[in-house]
Length: 97
Image (cartoon, rainbow, N blue to C red; front, side, top):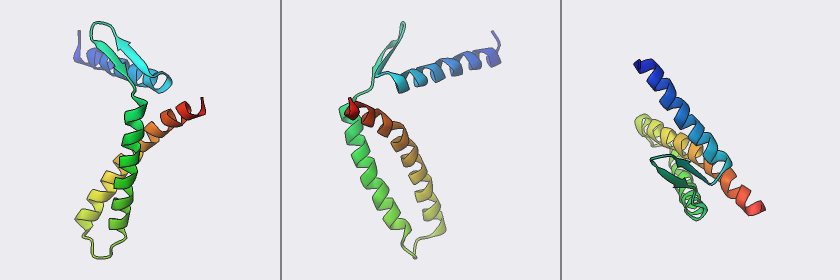
């Protein structure tokens, strides 16, 4: 099997698993294991990420911050925002039920 085909198959499998976790709280990969979405841990993680996000935003308001540190913090904030955007809908979905 060519490397290109193998890469496409693996990418498809991971994308399918990711999409399944968006809609469900668990997935099972035959012969590998079962993965569960833990809502309690997700709520704790969101609270912690919000604290870190607020502290990073406060640091960015400082005029004496170097360009290198500013870019590093902006990169971290981008990553935090992506994580928060993926976790918050799953938590809110549970609270409305």
